[in-house]
Length: 177
Image (tube, rainbow, N blue to C red):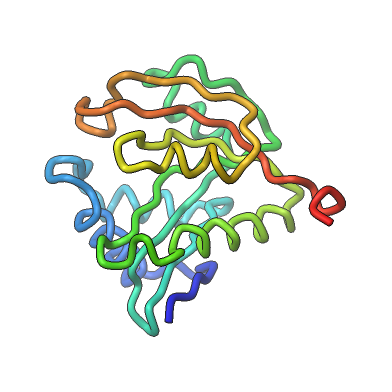
């Protein structure tokens, strides 16, 4: 049974599983230098939010988000059109093992992300969403889009495919009833 869980204590096993899921989910050559070191640094930052998808005890997917302004700083040379916004979180990375896709996996992860961000008073997320795998379309179909723009070749996809930069929001609690 698939479940989503916020991981609050980031240990070496969580970092290794996140790197492994990422490597097994993306095309060869898309990994960054020392992935375990890089992921470990990002995941252990105080404000990083990690949602792990599990099948029983096995980690099979993840999403991690960081304060949007951290991403603006990190990506200023790659996407200079990003603007600061302290009331937004940026989905920095997400991956689901191929065998678990299309099983409502992303929905479980996003529902928990929404819940956790609401606790922080955050109702808006930003991301660079892949176009070729349908992530951009899924986000557009299920969230209120505030901003969207296409980047034809994205460095982090090996310059092989486009990404959509998306700013989207969930309705506030009183708007959902």
